[in-house]
Image (cartoon, rainbow, N blue to C red; front, side):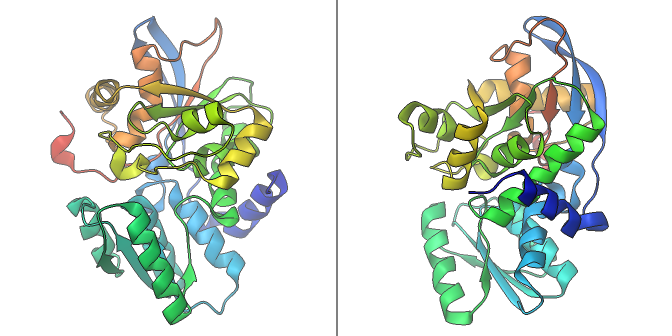
Length: 308
């Protein structure tokens, strides 16, 4: 179990090593008409996603003795770990599923990580990462289900509290749940809404079952939101803090991503547009007077796909 004190400790550790990402106020076209929103531009974080916060926090909290880290990741968590490892001057091995996006694998190699391709799904890559950690003594990181990872992600919530100091809800994309649970702790007392692709309803299914359960992974956003099960830490936090879930279609994600590029020249990946898709599609309709905060969480994408 972690709480807000862990998030505050992470903020103290990270300091100026992470970017304080800006908030952009905008009017967004939705099925219910134009809606004012505050966009948290977390895709501008080091490594192109929020995950850098958690990886660096875990490395800093582990002490100065770690000379190598290993992680299983389809992309963003690996990029974050490699970015943090380069900053700390340690080696990094990233185990990716065979179908990991070529653009993200290229970034991993550019960052100096050793990339190991193993298996046709994340669980198989994770098992291989465990083997490597045991064989080498490397510090093993996790994409979302590790206390320091969640606490680091929660610093996004602390920033939102300072930048948008009101009671408006926060909409967050959900994969394994590290970001949504971290923000729920960091922005204590605020309504937090998890937004998931219909084809990967990890949070939705867990809330219905009262525990994390395995779900199918079938969505355009699977490269960043492709966890097949909500993390145990996330389950504990969302239960304690009352996080809710809404589902969006792949077509809504595509439309929201295209809208961001067309209207704002903001380039994000499919997962990065998922939270906004809830507003644009009408899956989440704000109450009168609300100005939702929408977290744009990642931008590791192929620019050639921005119009599709």
